Image (cartoon, rainbow, N blue to C red; front, side, top):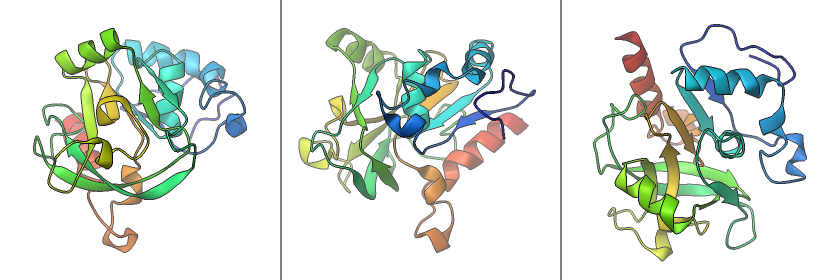
Length: 200
């Protein structure tokens, strides 16, 4: 565990920015946290190849810090959403998704007020064209539509990678469904994928 006021992340195989509120999210979610002293070293290590995983507010921090493109805005409903959603795994050739199948539909909980992913048309085309979309909100049969989009994210985007695939930000909470006692295990393969990739 590293406190946000510290200035250096110890030598690590993986850096995780967890969910939760940061500075009360009084400005934009993640905007103030992105300027915490520790983030300079997180950015440095990410740029040097250390894998980084940002979940929910961690995703917001990664966009505000410039490690991922786009921005997270208020949900289209302007309401906090806390429920299970279905996601499509877009690809399984990254260190975060090796234990999934490409196109697999999984169920993961969300809990956010500012999860509406936005990127302009040019950036959106680049993300799609370069395979940087990691997860997409979908229906149980894998179809993607406005009805399966819980927060208004463009192209139903629930998570994205940076250009080299070593930084992942996602709004859903895989850590909340990695054990049957939590109601599901669809988040577990993400963590198993990371362990497999970093152990090889």
